[in-house]
Image (cartoon, rainbow, N blue to C red; front, side, top):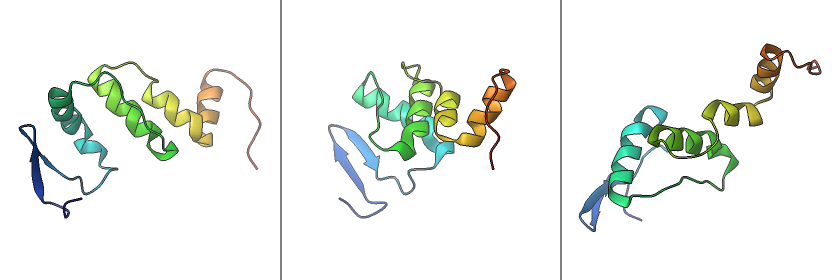
Length: 95
């Protein structure tokens, strides 16, 4: 892998290795650029930590997938409890 910040060109695409994978504010422009070049039809991850990021990436590009808010609720208990409370679904109190 090239050193951080070093650019490389492949197939006419000049890319710079990301310094921070959790940089959500930069995700939309990155997604647009990558899709323009690679023309992919889906976004997947094999890491639980990035489920929300993958969902946001797909939603921004109009690709099928779970809603980012639903993914957040699926693995964050506090958000899940709040969503169930708003929907009128009883849930167990946390200790």
